[in-house]
Length: 235
Image 1 (cartoon, rainbow, N blue to C red):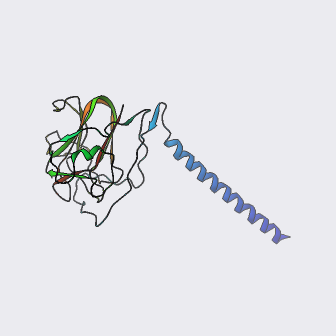
Image 2: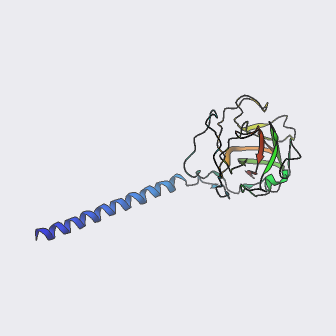
Image 3: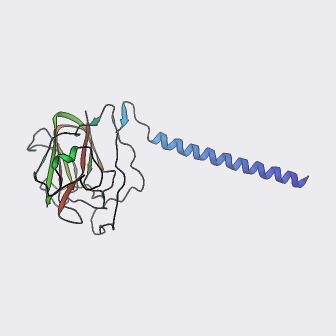
């Protein structure tokens, strides 16, 4: 009888342990869902991210100052007002280097975000910029940029600006990690970061403008500048 009671008791304790473990797991998952619940009137950006494509030996990035640590997990959703879409898709692109070394500048808004030959544009060395014309003033909530994510690269002097003036005599700076004013757009305080397939997503906070400009000044592997795709989310 004692043995039977011991067996029953063991089964009961095991069942209780499994039940509590399941409850804890479900509760943790529910908390994750609650954390990412969209505020009223908002929705997650409808992002279509390319597949990760790191290849070869990672470039030496140990000497890069003010380098942001990797998140170590997928980026949380970014919430913006409902109805926001990528306004840059198919729009006209101009820039400081109208004759790229590789590719055609119009590829930067063609929707192709793959890290593959034929999907990126290579501009000349040192400070360069590309500019997207949204064709009318828009409310802009987020900017998303891919330089080149086939390698773990860090691009320097990354500056993102919005303006209603095509010459950017007056503009709003959304992001700036140019720490020594190499691009002559002011000294920035934002971090350097490693390129990934998720791109660099920046909160534009509903700024209004027609033109969006992206600067860069080479990378840790060379002085050349690369752009795969830019997206501008607004309405």
